[in-house]
Image (cartoon, rainbow, N blue to C red; front, top):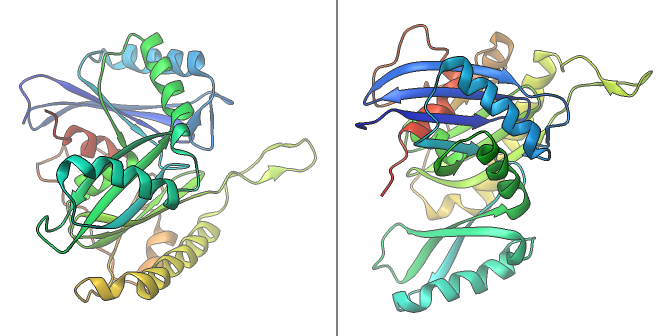
Amino acid sequence: MFDRERLTLSLEATELRLLVMHRQRVLHWDRLPLPAGVARNGQVVQPDAFGQAVAELLERVKGPRRNVVVSLNGQRSLVRILSLPTIPPKLLDEAVRREARRELPLPLEELYLSWRVIGDHSASRLQVFILGVPRESLDNCVAGLRSAGVRLQAMDLKPLALIRAVNLPDVLLADLEAETETIILVRGFVPYIVRSVALPRVVDTTQGLPGEARPPAERAEHLAVEIQRTLDFYGSTLAAKHPSWSPVVCLTGALGGAEEVRARIGAHWPLIEAVPPFPLPEELPLLPYLVNIGLALKGLP
């Protein structure tokens, strides 16, 4: 797949996950909890401390600091599908930005905006996938990586990396982490709906400090509600534009394999497993590192 080692780094709300690949072989993987206060709502707010954590993790695995691909948490990032009339290619960027200003809740000046046409380019209307990432969160992440001596090759959004790793064209991805849930409704490998919800630990009211993690049964129930809400929205707004589909759910993330979660979600929707396009070590805990695998698969010019 690649002639050189590729190091991938997934930034989660509470930890860093690292995986190193060479060609189609996974060489190393490791994870490191982030110190308190380094990230808030999945976004880096202390770049120097973040860089120190990255440097510690890289030193631990003796990983390369070049050819690094990093994912950002999906929180606060904005995904939309625009429908535009067919226009000359040279005018498309201006048209996309004009429509994005109307569709997105944040000013474009506060976002890094990227887009691409999806579907049939010769259709009467163009479908355009747009992604807006807050400039501050991306800039803080890049500053921390630089302080760790990382030579960044590419960045990606976690939901996009998951789609690549799971490798299923029509699926609802439900990513469950310690303090976040992300739901991604995918049709034809395109994320038509992306929703991220923060679920921080229960606060210790006596001292105002984070307490115990929410119990798996509570997380499973909350996830089921959010999945149904997503499917209801899809059914009322987008389903008529796509071929009929019986929803299937792929659970990912550090808590995606929890028995309570699988039982609760599997009671309502068929569960399907991720099928990465290359063999993996049996001892690799797949679900937490799916994002890293998707980053390793990211095509680069």
